Amino acid sequence: MAQSEAAFQQECVIWFHNTYPKLRGLLFHVRNNSSSKREGAYWKALGVMPGVSDLIFLYGCKASLIELKTATGYQSPEQIEWEQKVYEQGINYYVINSIAKFKNLIIKIIEE
Image (cartoon, rainbow, N blue to C red; front, side, top):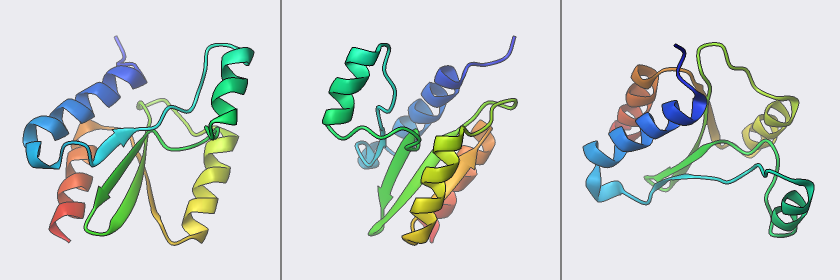
């Protein structure tokens, strides 16, 4: 059975928290979807934006934005548009589709 995106994200976050306990809080999830139009309007009024990456990692005076996808997942048009906005600001944006790639990315960021 294929792993869900939520389960994949949990695996990444748990690995990070266990591997880098002193950095907890610097990798966090961004709530960017809702279950109803009313709830969506509420969150939009608070600044939630469709397409924002699943995770943000703040380290070394830099922000790294991480979009997690399953092996068969793909970015929505809103995610692609937001990725472009991020790149225009010189911010790193990554699409990651495996725990191995996530681990390698975090290690690379920390060792830079």
